[in-house]
Length: 233
Image: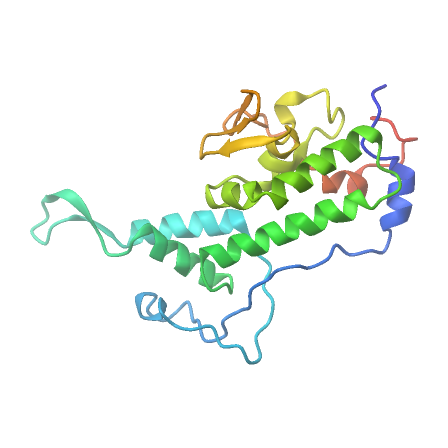
């Protein structure tokens, strides 16, 4: 049987009762009211007093920003005829800002920063576990470099999710390369909306990674995998 990332029994004992660190870095704007005009609130400052931390939801953010942008796009003239080109009452950046504010963040960059901070906390937490296998330790070092060099933030801005970046197959983490996240691929040369290019010429395409939906974020393995002597079930 292939070696697992963690000695599951030891890892579960080690993290038992421990809650992953909450590392969101932006504050909720209590003055933002979804029921009020969104356009009037775009330039509203974030109050510092009595602010609370908000956990980001990147998937909901992407969906809401697209909905908001579409809702403020006009394609029909007053007389009912189609416009030759759409009229955008909101730019994409403004729509993303409103979507971020719905989650209590000042803007899209603040939300993405909080998301990356959460990923950083998860990867750092795993790297400190004594039960990590050599393969797992190498993968976590690559993931830490992916984050520290700014690639995770860039990927988040481009719409990459945590499974595509940090996912692995629960039963065969290193054998199932199609489910292996882009953060574990080595030294990165560039990240685009479609792919990650690594030093040496290898590319991993976002649409192909985990296209069967079978991967999970690497930090879920130590929490959810049953004790099995440190091997894949």
